[in-house]
Image 1 (cartoon, rainbow, N blue to C red):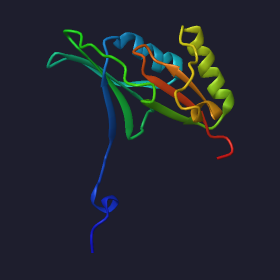
Image 2 (image 1 turned 180 degrees about the vertical axis):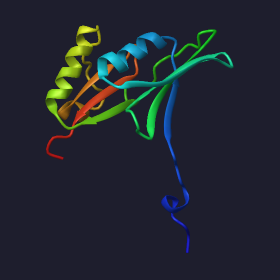
Image 3 (image 1 turned 90 degrees about the vertical axis):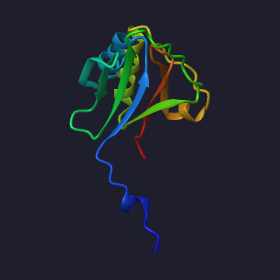
Length: 137
């Protein structure tokens, strides 16, 4: 009998990493604006500086890296999304208002599904974040 991936694949942690040339703005957007926490950082590692942002004690987080020579970082398509599922609409509204005050307004999603219960906002690099409501799910 063939072994299932879930039985074989033992993953201790998940990290989603991407380059940026605006690491300070990214930190402010995700920490002060969204409300995630900076859970680690490094500098001078093989020419890179980086920050890890996420939820304390979670086995997943985001990593943003910046090369000493400033790696260009064009955003992908408007359908490349980071989606945070948030149970309370009021929380989404507070985050969206904070980000708006910081200069990051809501944008129209490429896929209208995300507009039904969510708010889409572009981060400093133009990558899209969806704050998706899960009330009633």
